Amino acid sequence: MKQKHNLPFKLFSQSLTVLKQLSRRDFLTKSSLAYPALLSLGMITSAPAHAFELRQQNKGKHVVILGGGLCGLASAYELKKLGYTCTILEARHRAGGRCWSIRKEATNTEINQIQQTAKFDEGLYFNAGPSRIPHHHQLTMQYCRELNVPLEVYNNINENSYYFAEGKGALSNKKIRAREIHNDVRGYTNELLAKAIDQNKLDLAMSKEDMEKVIEYLRAEGGLDIHKLYKASARRGYSDAPGAGDKAGKIGDPHTLHDIIQSALLDPDFYNVPEYTYELQMTMFQAKGGMDSIAKAFEAKLPGTIQLGAEVSGIKNTNTGVEVTYKVKGENKLLSADYCICTIPLPVLSNIDHNFSSEVSRAIDFASYIPTGKIGLQFRRRFWEEDESIYGGITHTNNEITQIFYPSNDYQSKKGVLIGYYNFNDKAKRTGALSVSDREKLALEKGGLIHPQYSKEFENSFSVSWHLTPYSLGGWALYTSETRASIYKALIKPEQNVYFAGEHTTYLNAWMAGAFEAARSTVTAIHGRVTEQHLNYPVQKN
Ligand SMILES: Cc1cc2nc3c(=O)[nH]c(=O)nc-3n(C[C@H](O)[C@H](O)[C@H](O)COP(=O)(O)OP(=O)(O)OC[C@H]3O[C@@H](n4cnc5c(N)ncnc54)[C@H](O)[C@@H]3O)c2cc1C
Image (cartoon, rainbow, N blue to C red; front, side, top):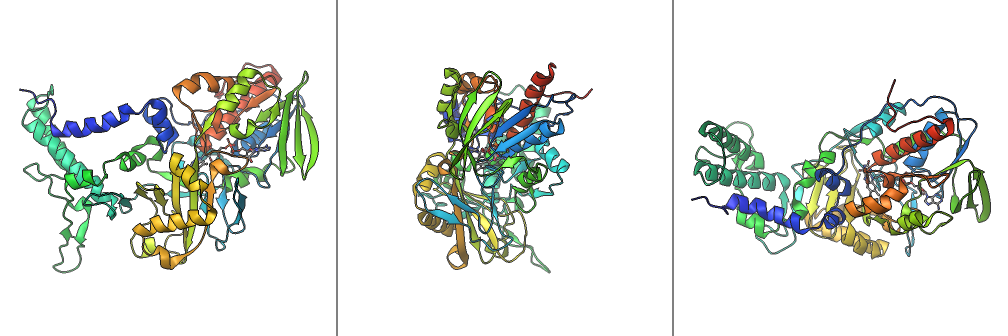
């Protein structure tokens, strides 16, 4: 008799059922990682670096670029290589947009909040926006190479970080090393599978020889003993570390599967997805000294091109080009150009006057962006390294803070800034609605449950809620398969002389690579039009 519902498959099918119960939209909007989620659904592929050698000159055209984030900067950089005249109008008093590293004296005034000024010590910072570069985002890697932005490894995965589940199980409200949960769950599920295969309880069309091989693999993968039982292995760590002489060390006792399940440690908050996701697999990188070095490197290549403090208030297609109205220090100004690349995030653009078609106007108004926020906490001592041997990586929780990111730079130095929360959706909305001091309180209280050192070592904080930050009003664009077919389509073609570009016009939302892909693709389209060539992006080398 075949057993249809044996335990290992029950466990797997339970996870599948949870996933199936979420609509695709839910999955994407509830997922902390919209782009990784799209990747894992096979809806998109990763960002390759393309040969980009456009030919012919520009016929003296002037392109006005709205927004000096990475897309605007890269667009101007590439257009200027072709001899175009470019003007970037940037509302903030800095370039880089979401690519922003918070250092001493950085300021932010969110909607309904007091102005914050960062008090971090000289040399300390955190990345409020992008913090990691996947090794296969070749375009981001290529621009770093081309612009001499030094990179260092970003440690995204750390088995020595913690899982912390608030709840009522035996393992709840305790910090548990990630390696213990990973290896115990791996051990138990492999034990169950090995047993089921051994007892022919699975309907597998496999030869005896293949089955033996699979069982051998499951034993190795799960760390099972010769009887195919999981009794803990050294992978989950030691309760008594090995040392000199007769100090053999003692492997820690495994948690029971029941306790792990009852303590919510198999819940979606703790799925191992981040580590498995294509985009988040090691090796990952960060720009040395702060991710905004990338924006600064572009800025250095664009002298006289960027007008800071220029807030665009109107965009009009005319018979001969575009007219852009903007304000500098309260004074209204008008700029005419042949073409416009508009990289303003859609929730901001939605409040700007324009004469676009109703289809485009609707698309701008109905686009959805993820609410997200981070807080940087400065501590006078890197206790996570000194006391707990945590060097980079992420602690996951199921409470409001969602996760703690430990810095992947300046290891073993004295002080440090860690990211005390990085949350999304409803948690980010609730956190963002708190006053700046209450956000700090929340981060300290919840983080203090994991690291009691917080209370003694904390110095100061700076928080950013992207959905409440003027000129961004969201983390990144979120699309579903439905909105890809409607809203999105309207935004990826030019509206007469205006081209929309930015991470929101790509399938690389939530990534700098999206801004770069959009820049190159738009520059190709404009250049093809100006020089009357048929150019398709990516442009192939010939
Ligand atoms: C919290 C967070 C984490 C992220 N993590 C990563 C990561 O780890 N790795 C990664 O690769 N990417 C990450 N990203 C994504 C990455 O930051 C973005 O995809 C990229 O920076 C977007 O660039 P952009 O030029 O399209 O948009 P933006 O950077 O938003 O640029 C738009 C510009 O328009 C300006 N603007 C707005 N309104 C006006 C106006 N009225 N007039 C003039 N100018 C205006 C803005 O000030 C801004 O400079 C993250 C983003 C966030 C928010």
